[in-house]
Length: 346
Image 1 (cartoon, rainbow, N blue to C red):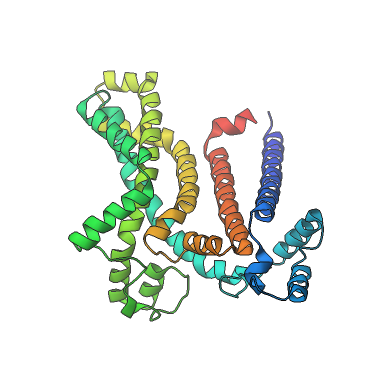
Image 2 (cartoon, rainbow, N blue to C red; image 1 turned 45 degrees about the vertical axis):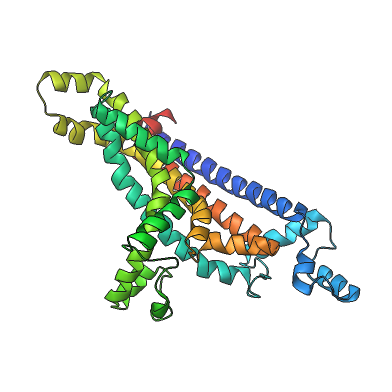
């Protein structure tokens, strides 16, 4: 097989995956849009009020395009979305795009710290469980993972607030910073940990860190459980391979086998696991943000849903779905680039 042929095959695979990505995005937008239209809420009533004049009600309905067939409405929605227009939020009166642009960095910051924590803890635990298979170490780690996988995040969050904030007072309370620090740091990235450092506000950085560590840890626990189980599974598969058995027979230390053979061979699989977990964390942040009053997309969606602001709910759902799909797409590409067996499989 020539190199040019391999490049052609790789290009075709990349093109096919990009096409699948856009097709999936279109299906996601269509399903979310239709669900938004069939929900038992009245977006016109939300904007003009239940006691509005019928003429004003009809005028607003026409202005929103709701008097058009659903297919036409969907076409307009996609066209406007391509131009960055997701409608106006009844919740705030602002363009939805503006609201999401303000809320998304908070969710991204929370989910990013959570995935870092879950990888830092989950991978070593998974490796330790595999290396100590069927011992008390393995059993303990499996129980910890099972608990993390089974217990609802919102319950963990409330228990965490009760213990670490109310009783022990070792972490900050709800919100991103204490009230007297709000609005001091100019928003550059929208992530207060980074913005406070850029502004040289160390005290605000420390305060923000005490506020984010608890929700990030609670959010990370479920992801850590999944990462631990997958890492253990990947490592056990490698430990049963002939090259590892031969290395052990030659007296190679477990640490060297781990660092030189097992970790490099499971790294590509861990990238996929991390991407899936990251996307799940963005979704899971919805509940966590409500519990911790975290001003991200999750809390924005919940507030919008409570007043029947369909524009905001649909747009936020699409944004989270799009991020999840793009993360999976990128992990798929990374998997292809880093694993030569995948390239050869064509």
